[in-house]
Image (cartoon, rainbow, N blue to C red):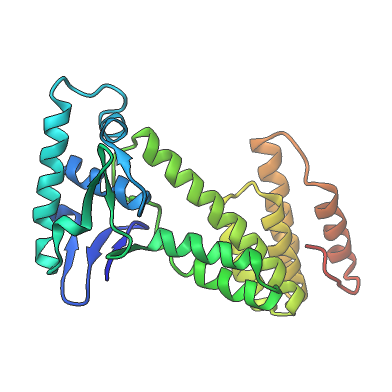
Length: 254
């Protein structure tokens, strides 16, 4: 099985050989591979590929140029010792990346989130943890800011944030305060203005007997919300702040 890493500094490798994206004969062939990997197992028409590669304005010779890029990709994957024609398949006027031969970190991330939604609390937390361990940076790190790349980055940023918030809530419910704090911090890093993330972080700090940190973080959030959005923290966060300030017996707020 060949793996493609799309989170962070992306690469393609099997058990014997690793290919960095600099080995794929230029930016455009590499982007073709990225598009096929993002749609693993699903065909993409040549027209759609061209639209993404040239931001909606492909050159008159786009078809032959695109076919040349795919030919270069098939040659590039040859060092991995697989049948390159079977890896990149021509189908219905387009191409697809064969999911029987190729896997991606994004696909594993997506599948773990689906499994987490269908599992009970304990198994859901384990799957969310496994999913959040996968990313090693933003999607397609270092590539140009084409619209489809920005959209993909933003989508996975949101997915990671939601997963971190859900994991934090489950960890708090399970009494794993240390893990809840890590997930809350990750969620805050992914979306600094998300109050649900700060609620988990502040709750976990309070329950870990780090009351000063909890109060400090609430003050930092309040200042940031006022500066960036002109609003105050939500009612639930203000109630949590009051309880922390009074050092009341804690209960699950997040």
